[in-house]
Amino acid sequence: MTFKDLMEEIKGIEFDTIRVDSYYYFEAVVLRDKLPSLKERLDKVFGEQVCPSKKKLAADIQQAIEDFGGIRDDQVLYFIKEKDYSYFAMLWPWTDEYHITVKVGRK
Image (cartoon, rainbow, N blue to C red; front, side, top):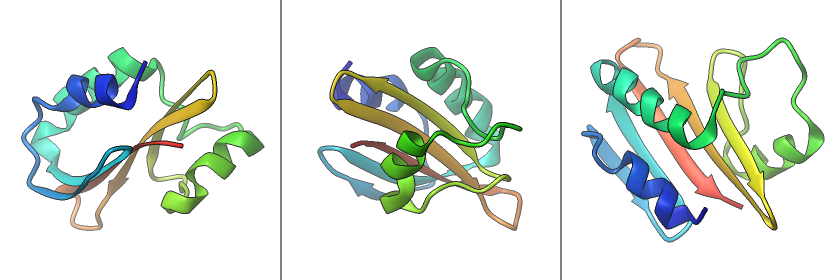
């Protein structure tokens, strides 16, 4: 998989705001009503989400996402490692319960 392949899977989502759209990192805001469609696409690419979970995140996962803000218990993390690269998607709900920050990247 490439980052471009990953982004092709989620491009059909209507984002409220796109903050960053670079070669290996994408950050946007999605409204809650678009979340089921986004999660369906992320499930297709990543499989099951890694977080939230009752298990502690592995050190390599924590290291890969720490430059992007890390993850808290109330946030969602998808993660896969392929060959030399790690791919992730993080969903950070806002306190207004209507907006969600979406971060997708390769490290």
